[in-house]
Length: 220
Image (cartoon, rainbow, N blue to C red):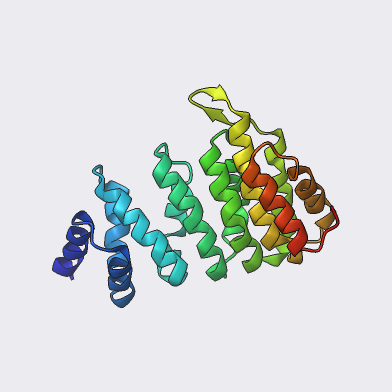
């Protein structure tokens, strides 16, 4: 096992195609532990490859990654932005197999990324939220409430307040609300937000909001 496990790390270092790496892990799940331990202790760029493989595996077979749920919870507070962003997405994938309801205990921590000041963390949390809502429909309205907190948040770019970053986050919310709207009860709040975004300064966000309103048959 050891030799095979080291082989997959070598393949990551050699920048082997990600689809092949994921297939290797799915075929031999014991690789997961090696990748997690490497991610936990490695200081070189190898850890970023390990994180990506684990994230992609979580999209296809979240049950293989679920035993490391707490590890990924810790990573969403990582000082390393890339690891934090990846962990946000991985955790959302794990909710579908979270029979123990462990996500409930970290709900607030997870969604605090929306108001933490980092645009990419916020966009990743919002962009991943439909997976959580679809796996746990009873959380949909709480998720809507958390997403709408972006309006009171301040996002920074190079240490300065950036309205443009906020509009990017609003764009992520438009996309998320398209998926969440059918299972939420707080539809008026979603509809109000979408209407507001039809006047967003970013062309892409305006167009997206108008398209989503049409798809959801919401009057403008």
